[in-house]
Image (cartoon, rainbow, N blue to C red):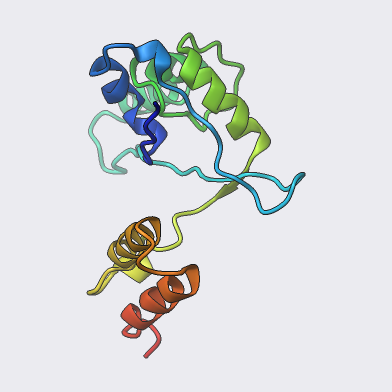
Length: 161
């Protein structure tokens, strides 16, 4: 009597707000090939900030950027948006139990990058789209992992030209 939702930590707020029993929402790390292997999680920057070099207000812009890069800001933003994790170094005391579970696993994992995001999604069909279609087909047992890999590889033939 459980449901599994494959998504990302950024969806915690929505899931908890729309649940009759938010305390029943849990998280588990994806499986590893063999016991002792490190979990790999896609962990990347979603929000970046910079200062326009020709701004008329460099002191104010620099003060704002320093605040946004502070531990206090990181703590606040991670509390407001559960499931978004700051790259700002520091020790954080997050209150949401689900976020704490995820944060513990993040600390023990090996971070990876979005492999299909930039260059492999620059043309059509996009790598991200192909990956989504292939994964859905695997979940529905319509493709084997080898079939899925071939589907993506064939779809990205434009990249290999």
